[in-house]
Amino acid sequence: QVELVQSGSELKKPGASVKVSCRASGYTFTSYGVSWVRQAPGQGLEWMGWVATDNGDTNYARRFQGRVSMTTDTSASTAYMELRNLRSDDTAVYYCARDARGSSGLAYWGQGTQVTVSS
Amino acid sequence: DIVMTQSPDSLAVSLGERATINCKSSQTVLYDSNNKNYLAWYQQKPGQPPKLLINWASTRESGVPVRFSGSGSGTDFTLAISSLQAEDVAVYYCQQYYNTPWTFGQGTKVEIK
Image (cartoon, rainbow over all chains, first blue to last red; front, side, top):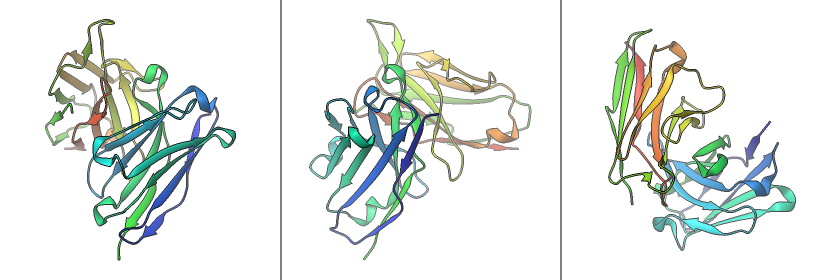
């Protein structure tokens, strides 16, 4: 069965960086892209960007460009999201999610990683 | 960016009754070349990640109960729950994947009346 397992909660100070991992199993990792979506406390879903797991191409939401990097390690079937220069409003649950067939939505989701930014 | 607007923000429906959620996009998400609407619906229960219910505006994912149905085309879409069950209490989101950045509606909270 398809499973995405994310790394654990993080507590960071403003200005720091965080790197969240997402280990995939149950399918061929390089066959589907991975998106990162975040959810601030009590708020809705925000798409941050997407990484092609076969060649590493990326597509970032404009508001995160310059501050985010999405990468993969195909040998470990793992995707990574690094967010730099953290601010308090980056406090959120961060999810990785695998494309559905034909890139028709996000079919499988990780359990989420809580990132808290506080001085 | 395509703005997705859902209505209502919340609704309370009696068990066994019909619930309807609307989603409007600021521009069409219908791709002319294949006549497909690039629109998905998700269900999110408290403390859980979202779950994909429907894509292509009306195609249920495997395992999704038949009481969930999606309809609409172009810029106006609807998610209906034909007979609300207790386990359907959740927040529902629409999402367009027509172009990036992929965008979500603000969510609709469904509760039991």
